[in-house]
Structure formats: structure tokens, C-alpha cells
Picture (tube, rainbow, N blue to C red):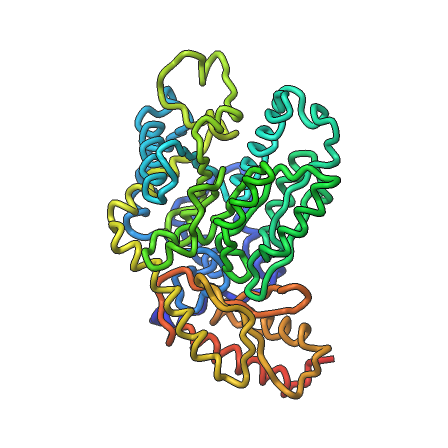
Length: 461
């Protein structure tokens, strides 16, 4: 039997092969099949094509398998299948979610007036944050956005959101869903380590204010490509000067603010109007498990919709569904609660500290490696790099790195990711779970070997 280090991460099969293998699962028939037969089909046809997130070579995305405490909570949540958006649907579920949010607000130091709501994903959390910002902007102009919509603004075409050039693409979803469009999402230049360039931002804001209404600025604490942390404190000060809502996308990085020695990197979080976070990343809780926090609990009143059968006026009972759109969603608070209680804050801090230290260690080792070009100074658990080889012309470097990525992924032994920083193609390692520099270096070595194979085979055109 293979041990975990020797097992492949996934089959490495092509989309056509995966489609062929999975077809029997959707061969729906009049009569059912036994659970034993169904388990066999799943084992033979589906499981080989699922990613093993707990494999040490999985270093491509922000995923993990549930840890033991989270698994216990998930089992209970599945057994009772609770809808948790209202007291009358689940008294225990609704109350636990509210208590969990209060405890998290305290844990992250968000202030006594803050609040939060569980979401399906960080994407939806970002969307709601921009809705709240636009609603708030409408209030400054004297009308109710929920009643009048965009036509309530005298010049809706002037409304813009500012964010980093490296911000998550979910912000494009958000402006589209709000009826603004991509042209209303403007990106800011980044500095040498892929953070919003504050001096350039100030100049851009001064220029934009002549013909635009900046109603929201989105900072990112842990960008998707490099894990870079925008300077929230300085951005917050600028937002206050121009009366703009500040949203912080902390889906990936916010968790690291719980580690004492990294807390200063997140200075200013408490001054943000809203913050998103995905516990299903570093905390090892089941998907979906995302949260949107707001600095002032009254801000969620802009989301509240009442009805005659649920969320009724005048009832003093917990109704988490008044704070976000889904009237039915899973009991995501329970696995998070059981995970934190099982591990304890000290162990969670150790869990979070490990991948950052491992990434920092290999970053320092690779500084002197003539075959590696480092593309970011890691602030979290992500490192981007390129393979340097004199046989590869600069004009072919992007193609070269895409070939390396494809080759590595196709074997199923290691999982890295491919992205672009500006126009430059880079390879990326994402360390989410506890790991070591030695484990990460195995993947780096494997990537180097594949790069040499590609050159030797003459695959570059």
C-alpha cells in the first residue's frame, strides 16, 4: 500500500477521460441500485479524479480537508440538516450562528458594534459588501437605494469602485450584479511587492474626483496571486478623506491576523466598513464556510426583507437571514465552532504559522539559486517564481512556464498553480496546511526536473 507521500494527488486524467469515467454515475434509471454497488462505482469512477487536498504535494489552491473538530460539527449538521436563517427554522442553529459571529468579531478585534453573517463564498461576501457600499452612498445623497436603485443617482455613470490590479475577479461579478459594469471598476497600480501603491493611489484619487464618484475602495489582505497585504491603515485614512466605503477582501489572508507576530501586517482592519473571510481555507472547515463582517451592525439593516411567514416585524428572536440574501443555507457555523473549540486558539495559531514559516524559509534558500527567479517577497503562504534557463529566449518564457505547469499537473504527483503578474507568467506555490520547507523544496526540485525535460525534448516553438 502506498503511503501518502507516494500517492498521486489526482489521476491526472484528461477532461475526456474523466467524462467517460463519470458517465455511469448519471445513467439515471427507473430502478435504484444498492448502496454497496453505488459505493463501488464512486470508488472506481469518481474518487481517483478528486483532488487529495491533504497530500503534501498539493500546493496550488486554497483548499484543505476538514480537520477532526470541524468534521464532528459537519456530521451533526448533516444529520440534522438544519436551515439556520431564522429562529423558527432552527432555534439552536440561529442562536449558535449569532453567538459564533459575536465571538469572531471579538477574536479579530473588530469592535463592539461589529457584526457578521455567514455566506456561501467569499465571492458572495464581496458582492454584498459592494451592495452595502452603494446603498450607503445613496443614503448620503438622500434616497433609499433599495427603492429607487441606480436611477436614484443623478449621475450613475460617475460611480466607481477602486481596487488593486491584483484584486480577485469576484469584484467584477459584483459590479456586474449591481448593474454598474466593468467600466465602473477601476484598478490601482501596485508596488514592487504587488500591494496597492499608496502614493500612486493618492494621485489617482485626486484625478478621478473631478469626474467620478468613488463610493467604495476595496483593499485585499492576501491577494490571490501573491498573498500580498495592502496597507489597510493608510487606505482607510484616504477613504475617510473622500467619504468612501472601505471593504477589505480578507478571504484568504485575514486568518493570519490571529498570529501575534503577523498581526501588525493587518493594522487598520478594525476601521474597515466591511471585511470578508473564508474559514474554509486555512481553518480546514467544510465548504461552504465564508463570512462577511461589518463595522456597524446597523449596516445589515440595508439587507433586511420581511415576510408574513418568516422574518416577521416585531419579533425579538435571532434571524441571521435578515443579514444576507439566502433564506435557506447550511449550518456552517457549527463546524467552525467545533473546530475552534477542539483545537483551541494556541493550536490554531501554530497551524497558521507553519505554512508562512515554511514559505519564508524556502524564499531565503531560493534567493541564491541561479535557476530560480523569485517574483514576490512572501507576506503570507504564497511564493511565485520562474525557472531561469539560458536556452530559453525571453520571448518564449511565458510559453515555457505554461508548458512546465501543464507537465507537472498531468503527472498528478505535485500540484502547483500558474498565474500572471502583469504580463509575466509565473509558477506559484500555495501553502495552506502545516508543512515544512523540506516538503516544499521537493516540489521545487520536481518543477526544475520537468523544465529540463521540456527543453531536452525541444517542445518550445
